[in-house]
Image 1 (cartoon, rainbow, N blue to C red):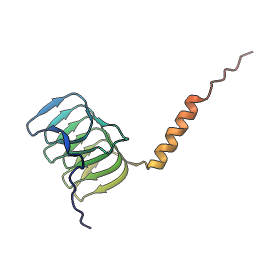
Image 2: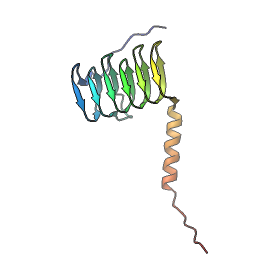
Image 3: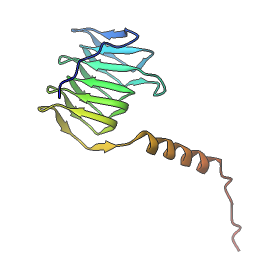
Length: 143
């Protein structure tokens, strides 16, 4: 099944161009494009519809936590996509992939685990964590 590649709706706001080497973490406030090298974590608020595109030449050494990821390059670290994770035929990941929806092309490489986490599961897990954190701790007196 073929599908049309869609351009990001709000336009790309962050670009790490070819030949650029960035050392440090990136917090995306909009769609991003990486065709260079990033040594650091790349994150975005999971409530937003941010999409990160990593081209064939792009490389990230660090974790990636974004709503939507289109990967054609290399990530050395864990990846967490709360929405759609697309791995192109030239994608390579050395780390675990945690995803809600996955589209993987023939030729993509993964050295790690695939972990499916639906939105319903994530909401349930967050609610459970909040309940545990809100519950008062009871201390039993020793005799």
